Amino acid sequence: MADAVFLALSVITIGSAIAALELRSLIYGSIALMGTLGGIAGFFLLLDSPFVAMFQLAVYVGSIAVLILFTVMLVKRELIFKKVEDKRRKFAGIALMLVFMVGLGAVIMDSGIKSITTDEPAVDFRDIGADFLTYYWPALILMALILAGSVTGALVLARREDVENEQRTN
Amino acid sequence: MSVIAPKFKFSEFVKSILDNLFWFLLIFALIGLPLVQIILFYIEMPVIDGELLTPFLALTWLADPSRTLPILKSFMATDLFRIAAFPGFGFAALLAAGTIFVERKMLAKLQLRVGPFYCGKIEGILQLMGDGLKLISKEIIIPAKADKPIFWAAPVIFVGAAAAFIALIPVAPGWVVADVDVGLLAVFAVIGFFPIITILSAWSANSKFPFIGGIRALHQMVSFEIPLILSLLGVVILTGTLNLSEIAASQSNFPWIVFLPVGAIVFFITILAELERIPFDLPEAESEIVAGWLTELSGMMYGLVQLGTYLKLYAFAALFVVLFLGGWNGPMIWPPFPEEIITKGIEAGPITITIPGLPLFSQETLNGIVWFVIKTVGVIFFILLPRGVFPRIRIDMLLSLGWYKLIGLAFVNIFIALGLLYAGVLGPGGML
Image 1 (cartoon, chains in turn brown, red):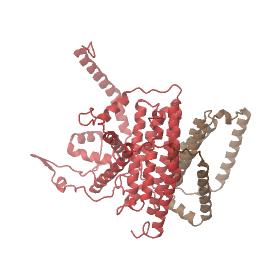
Image 2 (tube, one colour; image 1 turned 135 degrees about the vertical axis):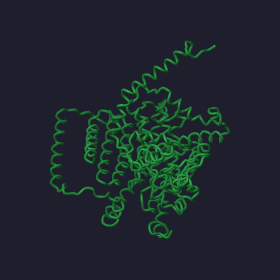
Image 3 (cartoon, one colour; image 1 turned 90 degrees about the vertical axis):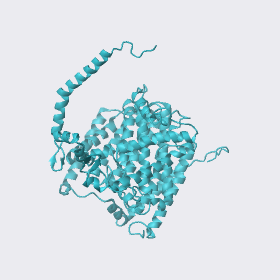
Image 4 (cartoon, helix red, strand yellow; image 1 turned 180 degrees about the vertical axis):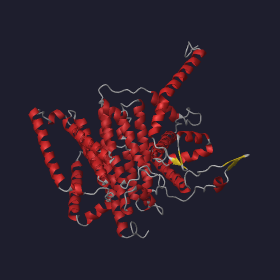
């Protein structure tokens, strides 16, 4: 069962990743990107970490993909993309990707991943929280500062000094 | 004199019926029966009372009312029943249908109209059925330059996302479709899909009004998701869990709205915005942009979007009940099941019927369902009420409300929860 699901997820993820790169329509490309990100969430579910899977869905599919869609819809694509099409570039890219994948696969296969036992219970999100507050606290503080900074930046950027109209009151 | 069918002959009418019957029986005997046999070969039948439920036995039991209950009970234990009927789609669709009717009637009373009146003799209670039949029978028109695959898929995915939301709501102790450990995060993940579906549907129609409505919906939903998520963190801090069933069970003594009223208010306002209801109905502003992102949808596609919207309304109201109003908890008002029906049977005049297998639900479950439905209906009423009272607000007011005020209030709520937790009043190991 798990093998079949893994295979199906792999096909979905890689297939939609290729589609996201190759499709001419930008909207369909971003939909395919959503498929890729959703497939990665499925992998996290298979790896017994539903916490990360749900965050993957909520953040990547729910927010990042929306931002991409939004940008694509509001921008004329002829203005920002110049088509450079070349058969040789394409094949070189595919070959480079294959070499990279084979090398990465060899490294992973050599790293003792085969001796990992499966059928462990799901990773409890309370453990993740406890780890964050004890061993990884500098990372947590750093993330909190970055997030607070970006939220503040977003608020400042979104703020606009409009000409106040007397008749319009907020 | 107008005649509907001028060449009507009764004999031909009977003949057509007999013809249809003949072909139906022929096709059923030649294709249907073998197909049923083949399917039954692969289905694992349940074992009831130590007997394997063969199709023959099932038909025998169905013919005998006193022996039908075990089949019903075994069906109620299946996942199919949970998904399709009780805590899932059927239950929610029933409540959603009731909501539509109550909304139309109540809105009419608020504005001194009568509302639906003629369809169904008594106060127009069949109006909804009539509308449904109308929507089903109408032609589906697709704009010529629309992006057809996305345009077709969007309403279906919308209903699917709403159904996924419903599946996470616990209705009574143990009665939930998907009892996941990270239930609240799953809710956030599902909510995140709605803006995507909306904007894709709006873009694919290739028309001005839907696109304006879709962009507005995107602005509104994305900016109100943040206070929505933040306002629920207080409950998570105090309960120490993300599982919705455990959150509901933790409120057996007092609901969280007692300690976190700020979070409840923020969450309620964000519900109104996420559901695109007045005063935040800019995406569908019917006096400005026809029907917003729904403009080009027709026939049953529109019906599906409406169904999804009201399912979403039920799901949000139920989420409010589960998180802030104590879910199914409440004083026991359901009377206990009379014992003599099990021991002696029902005496109806001269005959006595003994029915094994009763009761179908336990007393606690029924009591929980009653309290849950009462609270949910109350919250739905308060979601409907602003539509008769408030005007629509401008989009800049909407965004400044979401980004400045609601996020600030949500943080106030989180600090209240943290204060209660560190003071040792509530939370894991607290006084109460």
